[in-house]
Image 1 (cartoon, rainbow, N blue to C red):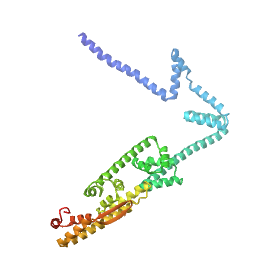
Image 2 (cartoon, one colour):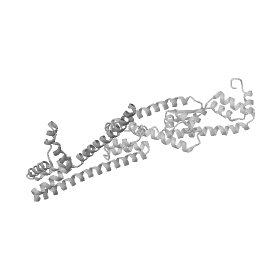
Image 3 (cartoon, one colour):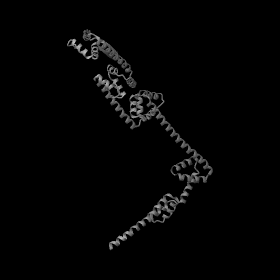
Length: 400
């Protein structure tokens, strides 16, 4: 029975406490919101709270009343109205930047003190603010226009082939059409690989100027890309040496198309192989577009490295030499096929025994030499197997 009464009391007291708290908190919250949102309420509340005892009441007594604030503003206005116009304008602009309401109040009070003077002051204030806004807008327009021009410049360079872009960057700088600062901003718009490639081939002095103007993090990213490109080029140089020793079939299969390498990579490989090797490989490539694109990339590398090797001219000559040689082999094959065996045996023995130079060609610093022995072997490769077998039986053991 006692426990039941206790539970009933708790059931009644709890809602009463909640209601009491709600009646206390809601007015406090409402008063707080009104205190900070309504100036009149704040002044009334401050005046009422001065009755509080001790330091708390003293704090509210020290807060200026609405009338006291108006009197302070009036004193400021009376003091300011005697200032020279330029000085008054400067002070008003400072106040406007910190307290827009106080600025507007002071304008009204100053106007009451001296309407004639304030007419001139307001006009100058308006002009000064318009001038400031105009200057700001003009600067923004200049920055926007410069940014657009830089993007257009970057797009122009990117639209050119690599060698043309490098030369155009150097030309526009030398002719003072662009500054190193402008070029650095343009480089911010390039892909990191593109920017790295340009810096690798630009004139050293100009490249240094651009690097100095670039943002630190941008330069770090470009330097990383440069190292990647240099590492790739070193790998391609090693591949060029490796492919010199591979069979012709492997050379044609790997280097006669873009299945395994990019065209620019092939250009590096061919550029670093002996001309007699690279020309022989290309003499078997029937794709004219492939050879044309390869020549274009080789020429670009020569321009970028400031060399005048004319490798593509020598390559074209070498290709022609190898094709003519194979044409002669085909022609001789047809003749040898119709020869009686005794005549063919005599011809082959004479050519193998003499092994004279059949053709000699000078290409740059290299020589392409075809011997009679090589000619015989190449012709025999084309003959019918049974004819070759019969010929071998007629030759002496050493020659066979």
